[in-house]
Length: 420
Image (cartoon, rainbow, N blue to C red; front, side, top):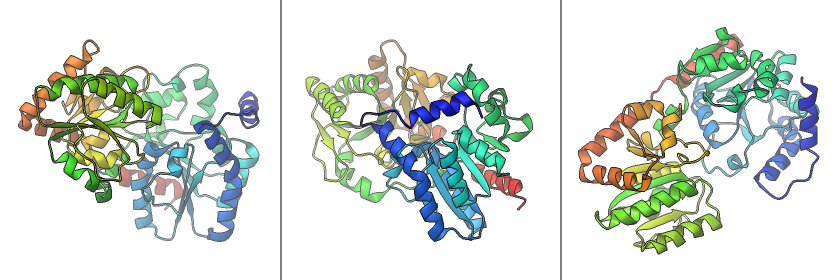
């Protein structure tokens, strides 16, 4: 283990932090070892236990179909999920694990305590959220580590020095890497993974999205609002997206009626919601904030202030917009609306996103131009409003890019590592 890394990890857990998402996460990691020990004392059986790990909500969705199929094949096995982000502590959906909690602090003593309590047969990591202490702890105990839905972007910081050098030893210890497509293979090898350990399996998250039905309790309050016109749902938006969306929507309503726009910010903070509402009012739009519970009125534009409902709200959409395609945020999941058979528009950076490439190539996802994006968004919205058959064809093309089978393929590979 790199001594400099361990020193930095110890420093991180001692320095004061202001109240923030990071501070909440650190507190969760600090308490995790004790929490897992208490759970194990009460509930750990002698049956095999699979330790799943995900950074946040999107990564956990990769693991859900794998854990579900593993439970079907091995009902007596136990499954647990650790995570890094506070978002999973409030995620409103049921997860197929015996317990979910923070990963231990990235300190040798905390990691050792969790290994002692859980006694895992294998660790299964989503996408590639590999942490040196966890992997080293597994290797020293003869516990295989597997990555599923492996994803490393071509411009990932992990591929650059010094991150690649620091993490090379970690990646060499991984027993299996299941990647989304063949383009991922050389990137994982460059990170240090053994070539014989890297396999193309597809993306298990596709199955999560295809199998999960929208929740009626989320859709019902907005159903009457949505029935009043063609609905565009803009999900995981950031400020640059919201400026383009509002300006374009103001132009669209003057030529196409009735239409409705629902904006679901990536982080629905009060200051951001107020900024969106003020811009909409300045553009002459009737807009309102909506918490996802009460019935809504006749506003043309709704700004959703509730977390954890975006995937459900795409069920209302005729056209989707996915945020993050401007600036450096990174485009969010175009697969979520695609799973509903909805055509998608995103900012220009979607053209450079590896996960979105397959959707863009088949015209299920359209990229806005970097010059005059407002004008371009109005044009694209209007084209799909005027030609419903083209809109439906684009939605089918988007959905057709999602594939089943990756979860079972991954489970069979994991069973192979365990000799089952």
